[in-house]
Length: 112
Length: 112
Image (cartoon, rainbow over all chains, first blue to last red; front, top):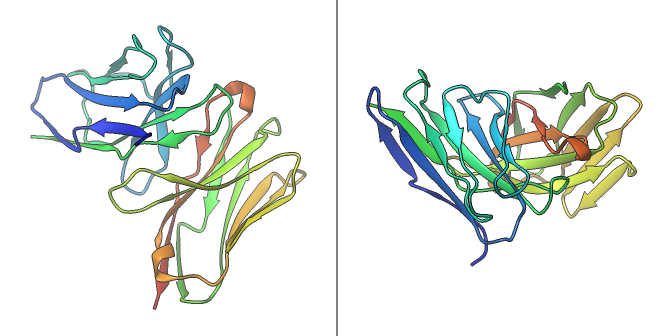
């Protein structure tokens, strides 16, 4: 099956802990994105990557970090500096920088 | 930057009726407008999109119209069914910018 996978489906974070959310795609897409979704709100862009080994900050990058060492993978780390991390995190990819975005199933992050 | 406003935030219709969701955007350079459907606990799925060189696009019961002069675009769902119940998001993007700006979503409920 081709598509975008995110793991885990649910993730729990303790105070002061860094956690990493996985995003993998086998669509051979160049661009990948991370969004945060809070209840009743739209999608806010955290980070995006146009090509391997390159990424840019989005609108709410503080407290998050990413890497893009492989074309198919774009992991997101939620650091302890993110004081309100509870949200639904969505990864997306597109064939090119100008292409249509397709979303993964999401990871729900909860703080213990 | 781009700003997208989406209305209404909630919409309830009777099965078989039509539903219309409207979005306005601020950046006249935006030239790509996708619509996504998000079911509870899942990632958004692209349902239809339109580019600025087209005024209307239709796919079975779903249609999107674009008015570039007024900078607004609308999603039309005809003959609604209970399985159409979901949150719908509009987005606007200038393709060279890569990033999309999303509306805050419309929760559509179709009552049997």
